[in-house]
Every structure is written in C-alpha cells, then in structure tokens.
Length: 381
Ligand SMILES: Cc1cc2nc3c(=O)[nH]c(=O)nc-3n(C[C@H](O)[C@H](O)[C@H](O)COP(=O)(O)OP(=O)(O)OC[C@H]3O[C@@H](n4cnc5c(N)ncnc54)[C@H](O)[C@@H]3O)c2cc1C
Image 1 (cartoon, rainbow, N blue to C red):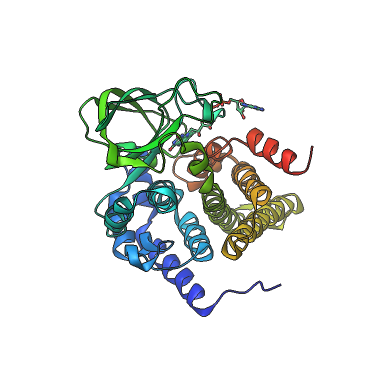
Image 2 (cartoon, protein in one colour):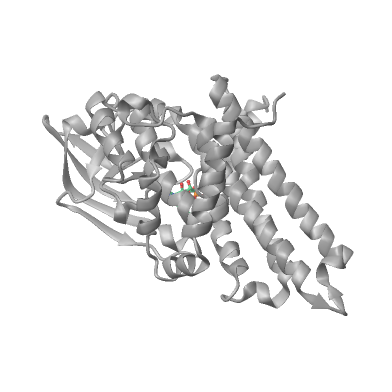
C-alpha cells in the first residue's frame, strides 16, 4: 500500500495551500458570510489558476487529471474555507462533471470549456418542497412540447443558483411511469429564462454559498438542453455519486483539520490556573479526539479517491466517507467550541462560524440516515 503522493500532486497541494492562505483572509470570509455574498473574487481567481479544469479531459479544455488530484484540491480548499470548496463543488462537480458523464457532445464541448475558463457557472436542482431524501419522487413537471419542454414547479435548497448561468434541473417528464425512478429527465435551464424566479433562503450557516428556492412558471427549455436520454435521468444521476461524495468528504476533511489547528493554537495560547489550557489532560484528550477524527475523514476520503482512480466499485466506501467526514466535522467544531470556552461562541473568533457552517454537512448531499441505509444494504442487512 502506498500512502505517498507524487511530486506533481505535492506541488498542487502546496500551490492551493499558498493560494488559500493569501486569498481567504478571515476578513474576506467574514464579510462574505455576514452579507450572504458569493465569493466571486475568490472563485474567479481559482478559475484563473486553471483549477476548474482538474477532473476534465484535455479535449474539453481540462487538465486531464483524476479523482486523486480533485481530492487534494478540495481538501486544501476546505482547509482554507468551506466557501472556496462549495463554490467550486456546485459548479465543477455537481455541474460540469455531470455534463461530462452524460451530457450531449455540444454541451461538453462548449459548456465545460466555458466553465473551466470561469465564464459560466452551474448549480444543481433536485430537491423540492415535497422531495428530499426520497429524491426519485421528483414532481417538477416538464411537458414535452416538441422543440422545447415547458417546466412548472418549485425547487428548494438550490445552492448558488443565484450566481449560476445554467441550472441542471431534475424534472419529471413522465407522470405515468410504472416506477418513480423512470420518467425522470435532467435538463440545463438558462438561469435567466423567462418564468424562472428565485428567492434566497436564510440559513444557519454556509451563508456565503447559500441555497435558494426556485419557481418555474411555463419555463421553456430547448430540447437540445436535455442531458442524456429523456426518461433516463435517474440512472445518469447515480453515475456521479462517487465523485460527489468523495468531493464533499475531502472538503470536510480539510475544514476539520483547519478547526483542529485553530483549536490547538488557541489552547496553547490561553492561560488559566497559571498555565496553558493545553497542559490540562481534559483539553488534550479533546484535541486528540478531534485530530483522530480528522485523520479518519482524510483517510476514508482518499480511499475512495484511490478506488475511483482504479475504476473499482466503491458504493459502500463513498457513503462511509461522506457519513464519517460530515459527522466528524460537526463533532470537531462542537469540541472546538468547548476547548475555547466562552470565546468559542463569540463572532470575533473563527470557531463560532466553523460551528455554524459545519452543521449542514450531515444533511446536504444525502443525510446521515440515508448514508447509513445505503451502507447497511451494502453490508447485506
Ligand atoms: C446547505 C444545503 C445545501 C443544499 N444544496 C442542495 C443543492 O444544491 N441541490 C439540491 O437539489 N438539494 C440541495 N440540498 C437539499 C438536500 O439534498 C436535502 O436537504 C436532503 O436531501 C434532505 O432532504 P430534506 O431536507 O427534505 O429532509 P427529509 O428528506 O424530509 O428528511 C428529514 C429527516 O428524516 C430522515 N429520513 C428521511 N427519509 C428517511 C429514511 N428512509 N430512513 C431514515 N431516515 C429518513 C432524514 O435523514 C432527516 O433526518 C441542500 C441542503 C442543504 C441543507
């Protein structure tokens, strides 16, 4: 077993780390978070570095790298700030990577290349008011009108839709299908299409890359914007799950390590009873538990990256990685607040924001309960 990285991979890690240190200042993070403001400057600079192209073939303008490099990038982006990771994730992984997997050739040639150059962004809309964990129960109806489809319905929780140019929208094209998994079609909706309105949602954390409610009233989508086969959306959606879950796991692993480092530095600095609180065994044990959890997240995430790279099936492993990384992240932030005492809940310190931002991981991209059901099934239970 090889635990090391290649020289190129180490260089990538170093350059992302340097970049995040320079661009993700605490003032910037706080300003974007406070104002529900998408980190557009950061996003544009990441695009200028060519990082949007990491997982895409060179013929579409990409860097021709693989899941391992994507994992390294997202770990470091997550270490810098969840907002760097999430702004990247919704456009690159949920958006362009799905186009790569099952989009039409014109979509791959034009839209992936434009996204890599930073000219367009994507969002991904599946969840609806009545459709959450039961994702195949999609209701938003797309009526087949020949040259175009006409969409009516509502989407909920669409991350970064307000800054997107195209929204990958999961629709129901056949209401009579025998199984709910049939009759689902994914299509690219122009975010400025007439009849589409958006409302930003106020939320507990991750406010800089917030979610939105989208209302579709007779929104026309040209037939050429369909991704994959009409009615074949569900099968296609499952193709990207490995890279999606590995990506969120690695982002969370990176943020987890950032929280540990922040708490360790604070504990060494803070003095009570005439010594650093890091000298108290009770505090040491908390910090150790936090570090062990962060390491586990990282290793489980890299296991999936490696399996994806080898083309191995990893349905169980990807759910384990996502489940663990999201739960560990919240545990670590929770313990981090405790290590800092009252200072941990003050807005002047980063821990308060880490705590709020970390809560959502156990819900988005498949809630913990759903990940456990998947793992149980894979265990033959
Ligand atoms: C910050 C954030 C960003 C998001 N971004 C996006 C996005 O970009 N695009 C998008 O489409 N969606 C997005 N979502 C939506 C997300 O995918 C859903 O919130 C998630 O799938 C859960 O659905 P729900 O919130 O409706 O909860 P529900 O499905 O109503 O679940 C409520 C509770 O019941 C549990 N539960 C449900 N079914 C079962 C079961 N069978 N067995 C055991 N327990 C069960 C759940 O685990 C949960 O604890 C986002 C959500 C958040 C919070």
